[in-house]
Length: 151
Image (cartoon, rainbow, N blue to C red; front, side, top):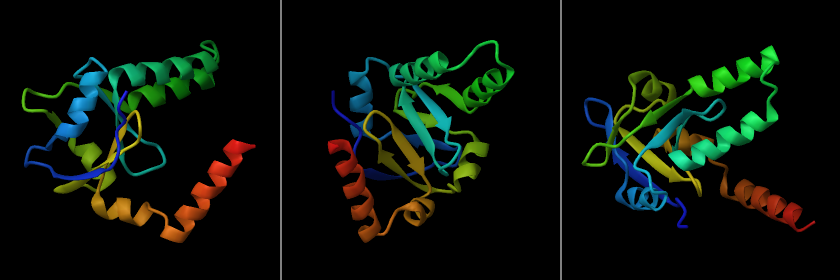
């Protein structure tokens, strides 16, 4: 299956709608679903879009690790699920992003889609640039992760 890669600049319309990039819509079609789940990430200032099937797998993995009778686990699940919403692009490939979500990521007009293999993120271009590692630090972190996987 093809993966979501690259970064694609886009612009929100006045109503908060955005076109999912055509390249990403093509990959979504490989998942046999037009629907995506938008999730507000707890640590990064971005919104992550999951193909519905990928989202369901992640939720299943989380559910397996939780005790449904434990109040802390129940709250964790409720909070995690409350940060998500199911979206279906219109016939033109647009989705409507809620104002509070756009405010959370600091998006006002221009945005950038960033591929994340089986999902993709929506960022304010400024915040994405601020959060990115410097080239030297990026190379060192990547090298460290790749060396760890060989061990």
